[in-house]
Length: 638
Image (cartoon, rainbow, N blue to C red; front, side):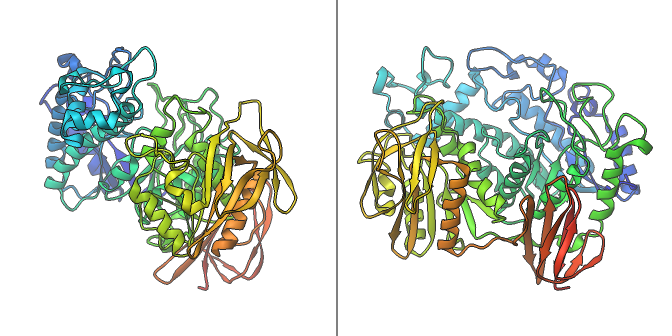
């Protein structure tokens, strides 16, 4: 570990059955030895509470704690995460273990951070058992106060679903056809909160027994079942597990987007890349290995996007178990012939010289609105089109800005947006009155907004906002949408930009009528030919763009270029295609990251002198060579 430059280790994540081999019978002697060895070697510990995988004795004694699917199928032990989040037997046993661990290790000199659970909800994001049903009813009582209030929120007069008492209410188990969508949405909210209660129960013990030690749990990028906006407020340090696919040409973009999310969840605070793989994973159909330099490149990308630490799963490649083919820093074979080990050692040596980066922040003039509740509601069934997927919409916007080296924050609808110049709303299907007013205020105060189709359609109860589409944004956008015309899988639609070029739209089209907006593009085919497809409207001191289809990538990039120009947004640097440029700043620092995602060398223009912190070499204005998947971290002006 010292050779590899390791200074922090996650420890004990799946050790419950070793730490507590029988109820109340704790065995910490072997764990003490590991903790002491790490401390003697100068390595700190991110100490896991070990509650992510219950031991066999617990489910054997309490089979009622096992999770149940919507169709009644019970999930059995033999893997991991085999617990119902609402199970009191599980929660009580977990608190008991955490209490014992915190009492023993709160004062240990190696302890740097607590790591609660692991990847909450990864395999069991929800449970439909009777215990969950009772907890769901309690959650609903807190939310609505009365059965009549719930009936109104769920629209239960439709299909004769009106409830007379709380006891009649169940989770949305397997039904003959579509369950009530408002019920489904509330169950998603409840399920995220139920797991959060598990986290909070452990965090309370840790805060009481070791109040000065920060607490985290590792997120999984854009993990749909958990509302990470709510979770992040309970974390002292945001951490993430990132496993981009080397076989996917979009993985660099997606890893950057995940990094921007983590920075944004922490409201700009530095975060930690808790897990990545040194080479390949074990759980895809084909587990492609990372190309030479790719692990190092993606590690630097996390730093560029606001991380102050880079870690791996796992240290030594397992000999047995389900993840024995998952790569590690130390592989199965000899180290002296391992390219993975050599790259790990190189990275560790380089990171030791990057302390100047710590504490600086990535700055963004652009915010993309992202809301878990709107995502959940958007992708419920029984819509005009099931082809609208939140992440596809997000990536359609983000790819263009990533290619242009424009840094993006993620923001929650209703946040204070005043510090941004440009706000993007790829889909905001569900929106509250407060969030709609916040967006209008942002534009009227001088901001620029770009919003896509099928936004502002329902309120937080998943009820249609009556009065025409999109009701809360009609005045802001200067349009009315008369009707939706979703496109089938095999069909797209022609577009003509106002200045002449032809383009294509996909997934969606709609009948738009202007009420103050001007045309940026019209539809050029189908019965909508000649009608508005993309519009722009002055509202107060600002500008609002509206996209009534998903333009092809080239056209999307052009529209966002127009929006950036309108908002005065500039890229971090002007560099060749395939080179990512991100700047971190703060405390008098300006640090430019240059990341070459290409497999060939490239010369990158540098405008300001400085020092390349990767190797300590001076940087002069002019062309700077970057090798294949090469990186530079330039401390400017120093």
